[in-house]
Length: 77
Length: 77
Image 1 (cartoon, each protein chain N blue to C red):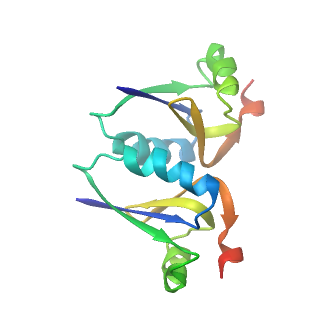
Image 2 (image 1 turned 90 degrees about the horizontal axis):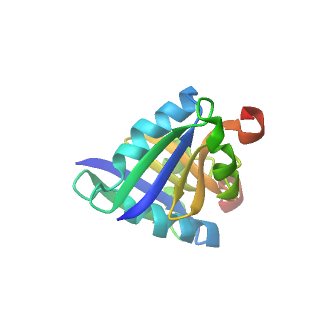
């Protein structure tokens, strides 16, 4: 099982990306974790370490993919 | 079956997104079409109409998601 972490901050663009993207991933291939960075601030460092610069973002097997633009991660600290 | 169209231009960022994203979509839910806009210029108008502003981008059920940034669509015309 590959890992995918979806980082978001509850913004409308994040919600759109979650509903269209996270549910689109193949459940046979991916174990998906969803992290709300505005509520789980202890996860900010992990997100930054993975290269996440803005939300919404999906980290697939350690590689960050920024999906559209909701908010800069610097604004969530 | 829902439709997803992945627009790219052969750039390294596009290739990364394709290998990690397009293959991650649930094949039971999505029929995925891949369009190379630098080679299939007749598809540029369709991409623009769907709201694609840069590549790589994935249009899921008509909604555009820009994944990281490879090239602006204006530079592919």
